[in-house]
Image (cartoon, rainbow, N blue to C red; front, side, top):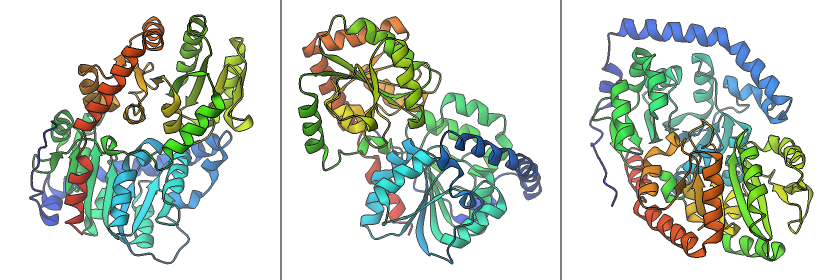
Length: 443
């Protein structure tokens, strides 16, 4: 069973703010950081403009990123920040629990995908905005607009100006579902004085594993700040309409066998298409469904599939019963259902140096899992699942083909892998209860 490291949250707000280097050093470090942020801000806005050429949502609600919310004031119990879609999905069960308990919530994210996810899940039940830039002016305007009593940052969101301003306003600040990969830790170490001072403003850091706890402490967090609670992602549940939707999808697809490539990044689609070329020679009625991590790439991926000689369509443009060789899913919020009707899935971001994506969803939906070896975003879970024989980790194109072929050829192997994944997932549950109980006691 999963063990917890609970530390009691001993420090008061005053001791958090008062710890660390002398105040002059703190101001000077953050002054230099703030100056650099101010100089880089025009380039950040320009980058959003460039990205909006492909995804127009990046140019929408721009004033929110400067803390201008277009409302007078809205007293909020809790502000929750999740940087993108993955983190928005991960924090969903905790937000649901907090809403059910009667707390008012303001949600922020950084990307259009994250905003779409939050809107789908919480529209009408929570305020939803883009997060402000990390400038003192932007965060002050934002906090004046929503007036939260508590701030929850998700995973690895350490923003010096945010934290300094929240500290001055005596807000309780927690970082939940915390993780700090070895790669990220090394990057943060180059800014250790600033990051260490920023961590001192966080009252509680709830992390996914002991390795993450050690890295936060190495960056300057105190040992009594950091607790190992596990990953909230393990506590995700299937949507209420899961069985109905997947049954209807299977009826439309009839006897087709679905090979799924989930949350893929550039380079991985070509790997999967090469694998598909070989696999469909051995497996009749096999069809490849590609779900790119970033939906705006769907047309580009369709063109790539056609270059391989396949028929390819975007899901939004054809009925479910389409017989195209390759179907590219260009709709948000559909991945879990595709896991539910697929025999085996490759979970992307893992054969490129991205750190992997959430394979726990595939386990929950009872789909056999193959993944690459770049898994630093899920290192503790990956170790547990690999040791249990619940996922197959591959290191190359050739191993990818071999692993997928074995899963498609051997039903007993596939069934056993799914069973082991479900069992391992069940053993890692419990973080949601721990985090909710601690936070609700602080309000």
